[in-house]
Amino acid sequence: MTSATLAGLVGAALVGLGLYGLIANPQPLRKILAFNLMGSGVFLVFGIVARKGAAAGLQADPVPQAMVITGIVVAFAASALAVALVLRLFEAAGQATLNPDAWAKPPDDGAGAE
Amino acid sequence: MSVLQALDICLALLVFAVAAWTIFAPGAFAATVGYVVYGLLLSLVWIRLFAVDVALTEAAIGSGVTGVLLIGAAARLRATESAGHEKSLSGLSRLLVAVLCVLVALSLAGVVLLLPDQGPSLAPQSMQHLAETGLGNPVTAVLIAYRAFDTMLEKVVLVLAVVGVWSLAADRYWGGAPGEARAERPEPTLAFLAQILAPLGVLVGIHVFWVGADAPGGAFQGGAILAAMWIIVTMARLTEAPQTNAVWLRLAIVAGPLVFLAAGVAGAIIAGGFFAYPPGFAKPAILFIEAFMVLSIAVALPMLVAGPPRREPRQ
Image (cartoon, rainbow over all chains, first blue to last red; front, side, top):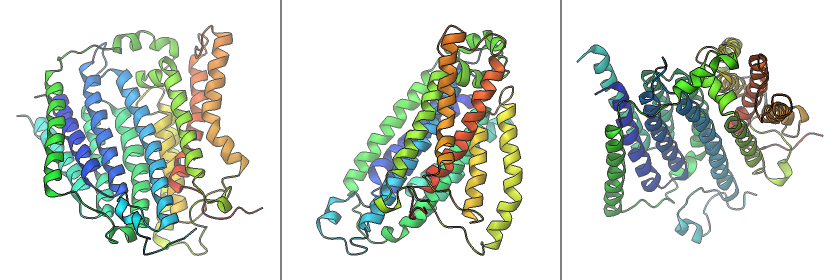
């Protein structure tokens, strides 16, 4: 097995792990983390497409590489916005949960921070 | 099995183990620290895929700047974690989710294993026209020349993200500064680190940008390193984040996409195509655009990490 295939398998496993975390972890911050993990797994699978496109004296196709670089930056921008939303929710309501039951009763701490 | 193969397998196992930790760790803070380690290990995997440009980006942005963002958020959300508002899935649903995720991972792994050894490639085309761009690094050529429109729009995404984050400010803080105020007596260890690291880091950042034309590196990586240096100095509270209504700050954030777009339009007039560069003048034009991109990235990333304004604006 080549190192590229191995990296691709790691990418596949990361997508699975990230997806699990995204669904099973209840906290929003952990979901953002899991989503990033999933994203980097997708990038890695794309990375072996680049490696398999080695030609013309290059070790890897530059086009997928450039797209992954763009992807990493966009993923960061999306994460930053998501984190800001979670923190704002926490500031305004004293809790940052996605559990509807916790919102049904009035929050027990930091109510009406705004 | 050669030594390199053994190392590859160890690296793969390590990446998987640390990734599993970030998902299953008991606390959010521990998980985010795991994520930083994971990002650094992942950049080693990228080096093994001969994608050094991606490795640099992953280390600087994927691990470094994202890490600071997530660790900061985890620290501030610590209080809610123990509040017990969260409802975990039942054992059966967890099992079902796990089965689903294993299936997704297995099918992806199947696709990876079925890929042909020599896939379709745009490498010959990128090399064919590389001389016309005056660059030596085909990845930079793809980013700034062949797929320039993509990269320009991606800069717009950064601007939109900054606008989005700022607009989460409470009304009375609009236009104020985010983050903590400058400290009278900064924490000595952190201040020492910032004072030693920042000047060197600025040098490294500019170097990575400059060599990006011909070697691995470029505007993203260099800009992210510069951003990290600003973040370190702000974290040490040697300085404070600027007010978000400062004209220079807003100009610096939009300078990258604006200059890029202007160059694209100029190309349509002078060189006969949107985002075309005049022959023989491509490299100076590319470096000029990249310089403004570095500026925008170096300013936008710390602003995204700092979050919405949290102090009232001074008049």
